[in-house]
Length: 219
Image (cartoon, rainbow, N blue to C red; front, side, top):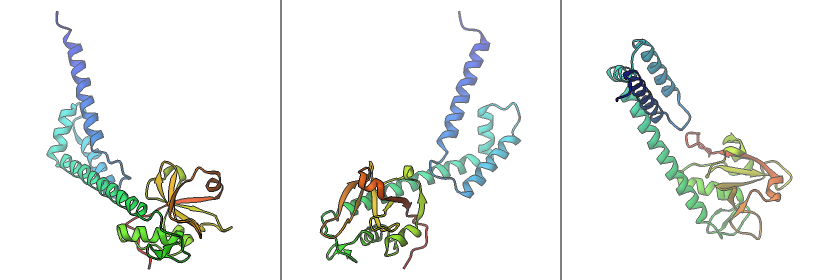
């Protein structure tokens, strides 16, 4: 004996709502929303409010499609995905370039693999080589010109700063993930990867920064 029609209707409505929620989820960006995207969402919300109150998810979807808003949302989704791929590729290139300098000796004032690097010269060279971003020369200036982030927000490619000379932001390295960073440590040493969780680095940690490509380059 078939189930009552009311239960069938209820199940169909639940399935429709689930599909509609999945559709909405698929177009939301994982990156921070820009002003134009917020404006688009507000437009969608206004359009949805203008739809009939008892409209089904399919009716609302059709209503948005007639207004051309579904196409705009789909364009946003693809744009966000493309940007995510660009960021991922750029980060991979940056870390690859940084790792390629492992073993290059420390040299105070150095900014090339041929002569050696100091800590800020290493960071400057890696970013310039990878994205054409020209950072300031000194570690404290690099800290001042980049975006402040919390330690728990660290992602590969971010900068990490330490107080190793009894002054703030006197040392810098590039975070590579898993609590580790790559840097040019000091005279007599070479570019290498170290663990930020070691007590020495934990005690001297000064902060984390993010280099934004949109930021104005420094001479």
